[in-house]
Image (cartoon, rainbow over all chains, first blue to last red):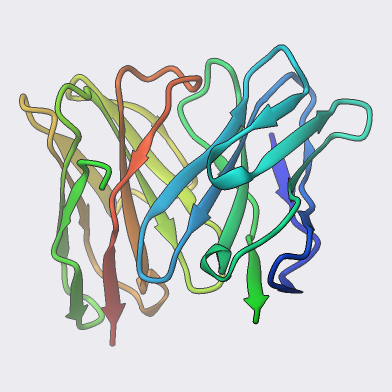
Length: 113
Length: 114
C-alpha cells in the first residue's frame, strides 16, 4: 500500500519570500506523484504532476516540484509567494495502473503581508 | 471552473437517515471517482466508476454505494448515516480510468450529520 506524509501542517511565510512544502511517500513500486491546491470552499485543482522523465516538474502559478527517488520525496517550491497563494496544498500518489489517489494530510500555506 | 458540478452544495441530515449526492462530470469524461474529505484531512478514495461499472473501491463499508448513468453522471448514496460521515464529498471526473490522466474535481458537497 502507498502512503503520503506531509510533515508541515502549517507554513506561514511573508509575501515575496520563497517557500518549500515537503512531501514524502512510501511505496514498494513506482508511483505517479501529484500536487493539488484547495482554496477555501473549493474543490482541488491540479498544480503539477510527475509521471516519468525529468525529475524537475513545472506547474501552474509559478510552482515547481522535484522528484527524488532515493529520498522518496516530491517537495513543492515557489521562489516568491503572493497573498493569493494562501490555500491548502495536498501531495498525492497513485499507481500507474491504479484507480485512486492516496492523499497526504495537507499543508496550510498562509502568506502574510 | 472544471466543468464538474455537484449537488447539493450543503445539506444537513440526521443520524440514521439516507443521503444521495449527485455529480455531473466534465463533457466527454467516462470515469467518475468519489472522495470523502473530513475536516482538516486529505481526501480519501471511496470508489470509482468507469463506463457505468464500479472500477475500484476504497476502505468504506457497503452502506456507501454508487451509480453511474449512461451520460456518465454519477450518484453517491450513503445509508444509515453516522456522525462520522460528516465531511466534504468530492467528485472527480477524467477521460478513462488511467491514473496518468488529469482528473478534475468538483467543488464538493458538504454533508453534516447531526
